[in-house]
Image (tube, rainbow, N blue to C red; front, side):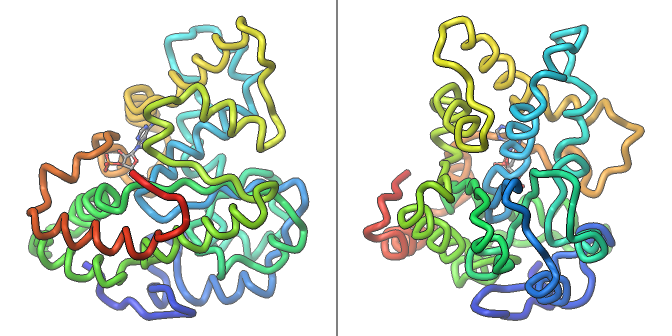
Amino acid sequence: INHNLYKYEGFWYHQGFWFHSNASFSIEVIMALQDEFQAQPSNVFLASHPKSGTTWLKALAFAIVNRAMLKNSTDSNTVHPLLTTSSHECVPFMETQSFLNNPYHANDLIATHLPYSLLPKSIISSNCRIVYICRNPKDVFISFWHFMDKLRDNLSPPIKLEDAFELFSRGVSPNGSCWDHVVGYRKASLERPDQVLFLFYEEMKKDPKNEVRKLAKFIGYPFSEEEDVDEEVEKIIELCSFEKLSKANKDAEETPKVIPNDVLFRKGEVGDSINYLTMEMVEILDKITLEKYDGLDISF
Ligand code: A3P
């Protein structure tokens, strides 16, 4: 499950090129980015620990920024073709080789799984905006376990929940520890709320209208407060809903997928981890969460 992970500056990474040539989250790429990546003040970074709702955040931000184009969509019941590719192509990950070849990326929206402390320095100094999405670590873990299990090749045995748990709870997972990842961005958002917006997956599920408005305002594409604009906000929420996005991506067969559709979209619910974790596992994860997030005003 987490073979060949190495600790680099306090977080766990693969060495060499893992996954896919366009999505190689590896120490080599991260190190090169530190020196070579030049952020532009107009960039908006969408940051997350894996399995925290990255794809959803990317789609929402993309839909907000491009809403004029989406509005012209002829059939409001189908997802605009632009959104079907937004998860990977339209909002690329910074930790990819393409960024090394082209540090001045044309798109202002850039996703990253890098922890705050490993972001290229130009991101902090250029004062561009960062949006972070955080999710209950129990749900992150279960989502991650399913994800890794679905990605395994047919020759490997299924990943045991207990084995995955043992590593995850010790912080050993790609880009982990999950808790330290959150803490870095949370502290930054408390210190510099103008630069870092901290969102919760659970809040987005509970009150998407409010959260989408908050996101739009922060990234420089605010909705007006008028009532009739509510409809526009609702349309974006609907376009980026789990049901629509998972279906849209399935429909876009012509786009080769870095990660298959059913792996990227599983359930999209809050609290599903309770169906898998033992009481003891829940206690352990809750204890770590309480300790790590102490004083940071994070609760689930
Ligand atoms: P589950 O495995 O719990 O279903 P990431 O995009 O960071 O990899 O996170 C993946 C998780 O977000 C998965 O959680 C996935 O189903 C969920 N997800 C994807 N799209 C979503 C959406 N539009 N709304 C809510 N959850 C979504």
